[in-house]
Image (cartoon, rainbow, N blue to C red; front, top):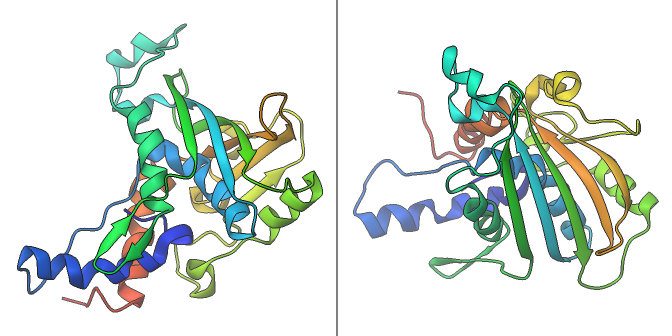
Length: 240
């Protein structure tokens, strides 16, 4: 399960997967739930900079395209919010542990150090999943300026490799108090960037912010393309 900016090293498990399944060729690599991608990269950037996070409360506002709505059925969402999406809360609470985990020997070990509580809602937006996140740090709390500096400077292997579908800036911060917004920000950098805003103090944890990603690009086809580009450059995929 890959977000290439976060756990590109996990592809090293492919030979073990092939061995365990008796495969001489082929392997299975998947992208995570589309809503996870609207906030996990900013969280990982802080962890990688030495500020481990211990707890998060997340409320997602997920677009109708994520449900496959089209035509007349999409009228269900007019003047409406559905406060339940089957399986989404469980995925939002469990998949980050896998992505942030590590390899020990021949197996993955999940990172369960972050306690996560998620509320997932379907909202009348065409494309773009938004997440409102409150987070608490396990140790020293960075200053707001430090958080913004970490997000602005963050790049990873896809950017170093200059993969064609990788966003030049994986995390784009908007200073306006009313951003990000799906209609205005979901297409940032080919629809592959995570757009973040409203970083501010939290009265329960340490900070809160709003994240946005394009669910049918970064969270779907585009994320799959980026995975394939990474696997090709690492030598796991070869031309037919």
